[in-house]
Amino acid sequence: MRLAIAKEKRAGETRVAATPESVKKLKGLGLDITIEAGAGEGARFADADYQAAGATIAPDAAAALKDADIVLKVRGPDADEIGLLKKGAVLAALLAPHSEKDAIAALGAAGVTAFAMELLPRISRAQAMDVLSSQANLAGYKAVIDAAARFGRAMPMMMTAAGTIAPARVLVMGVGVAGLQAIATAKRLGAIVSATDVRPATKEQVESLGGTFVAVMDEEFAQAQTAGGYAKEMSPEYQAKQAALIADTIKKQDIIITTALIPGRKAPILVTEDMIKSMKSGSVIVDLAAGAGGNTPLSEADQTIEAHGVTIMGPTNLPGALATDASSLYARNLFNFVSLMVDKKSGDLAIDWNDEIIKGAAVAGAPAAEG
Image (cartoon, rainbow, N blue to C red; front, side, top):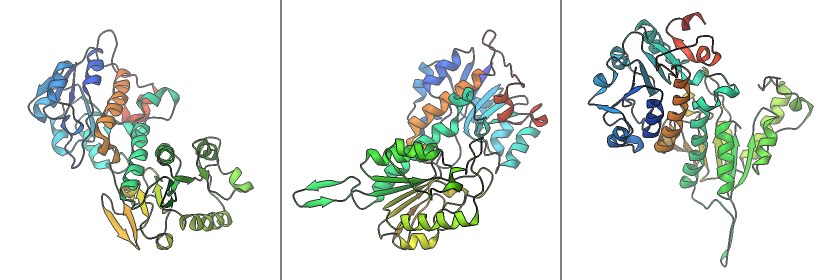
C-alpha cells in the first residue's frame, strides 16, 4: 500500500506533512512512501534525507499522487490536486471544513475518503493526534517573540547605573493552548503578564504560569462554565462590568495577544477601536484570529499596520514561521492518526468506522456522509 506526500501549493505554506523521522515510522507500518521532490524544502528537510529514511522521490505532484492509497497534506488540496487523487484514496489534512465546503464536496464527488484533522474529538485517546494543539502551541510562542521584536522597548526589568527600565506589560486574551504558551513565553522574557478568559477554570491555569487573571470575580462568573467546559452566556450587566474592566486594563498594556476563535463563525471583537486609541503609542497587538475576521476591527490578515500609534499584526500561519518544528509535530500527529487505519499485520487499509476518532474527523467518502 502506497502513501504519498505532495509539496504544499498554497502561498506561504512552508510546512510539510511528513519528516524523515515520520517516514521511518510509516515504513514500519508496512507502507511504501513517495515524496514529491522539494516537498520538505520550506521546513529544511532535504530529498536526500527522505531517501535515506526509505522514501521514493517523485519528480512532481502527478507522479507522487498517482495510485496513492493514502495522501497526507498540511492544507487541503486545490482542484488540480483533487484531480490527481484516485477514487478510493484516503486523504488526511487541515481541510478547513467550515469554510472550504466546495472543496470537500469535490473530494466526495471524486470518491476520496477525506479526514479533516481539525475535527478530531477532544478525547484523551486523540491527544497524540491533536494537530490544533500542536500548532497552536507554536503560534502562541511565536506571537510573543514577534511582538517583542516589533516593540520598541525591552521586555524585562533592567537595573543599570543609568537608571531602571520598567518591564513590559503583556495581556493575553483567550487562555487556550496558544494563550497559555503566550503567557509562559512572555513570563520567560521578563514581562508582567495578565490574561483574561470567559471560563473560570482558566484562572488557575493563568496563575500557575505566573500571570494575573483579569475578570470581574462575582458569583455569576463563578457559574460561567458548563459541565462540559464551555462558556455560558453572561448577563448584559456582567458583560458591561467586564468590558469596563478590560478597557481599563488595556490602557496600561504594552503588548496584547488575542487568540479567540469560534469554529465556523467570525472571530469575536475583543479589542475595540476606542480601546486601541487608549493604548500607549508604540504598543503592539498580535491578532491570532486575523484570518477569521480578527479580534480587533482593524486587523488585516497577513498584514502589519499601524493605527492610532499602535502596531497591529495579523498573522494567519505563525506555525509556518517555525516550519521545522511545526512539521515535526504535525507529522507525528498524522502518523498516530494513520496508525489507526492500517492493519499492523498485513499493512492493508483497515478503517474502523465505529471508532469515534475516525467518525469525528471524516468529512467525505462513504460511509462518512452517513455520520
